[in-house]
Image (cartoon, rainbow, N blue to C red; front, side):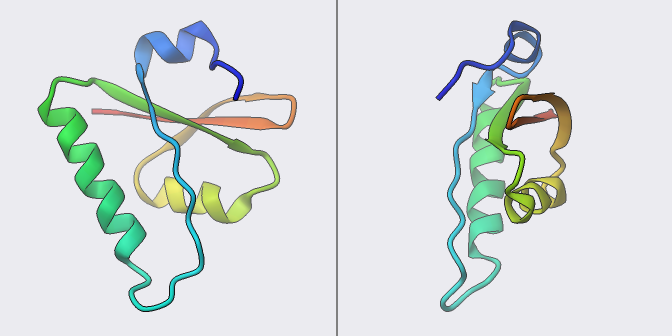
Length: 85
């Protein structure tokens, strides 16, 4: 995986990588799990988190958007999403 631009890493130092598969039993489980992870990062003093996804993965971008992530950069075929605490 390519490294995020320095401007993103400075303001959102934590990198989040997540693969969301189609839900089998609980469609809210991935969002709940990520919410817990974000809360733990914030509790440990992290001031922001970023993720890098393919620009064609609209499902994953919607998933991150619902959790408060916003697009901060688009480079080539990659989209960088970030969320500050």
